[in-house]
Length: 249
Image (cartoon, rainbow, N blue to C red; front, side, top):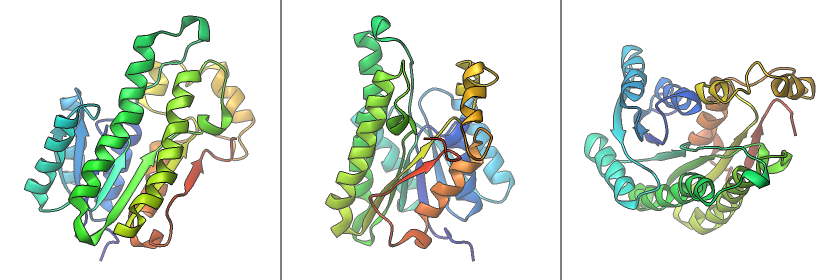
């Protein structure tokens, strides 16, 4: 028996990168997975296809996590498809690094709407749909909340908010048997980090040189930590921020 057998997981922003890796790992551990996407339908369907080809269960569901109606529909479709929801992974996120002089209101609202409002809306819906049995919410934060790199004021602010939300909700939802934790990755090789120019750059080399484990992360590294928190192996763990960065701080 796999450790997530008979569990249903909703993974937001799971069409590629870290989210896709998490969806595939949870499915490999036995969970039925709802692969949420905002616009990348084809990529999400590829993730579903890979899970199904490996003997797992998954379905792709569109939804913008910054819109309450979309989030409610996402969970309604998850329950309609699989009968329940037990796990939420708040992975959907965006980042736009810029110096203070280049800061814009549009960038602020875009990042906070997805990274913070989206976490709150999805967590609210999850808590409602978990029911009396409880469940597990895993937020995907970032090492930037502790590293605070220059040029990341807005993004770091959003991820620092996720840290705070994690700890607040762990106390608020604990009496309902809902655990809330966060996995905070360092730099990870994804389509996004590659397109942003981090991978293969001097910035990457500098990070690797100060990372005790001597490399950048892979989506699987984050997925492994997330799967642990989703499972009963972590039944006594809540309110924790797991820094999954190879030791980079």
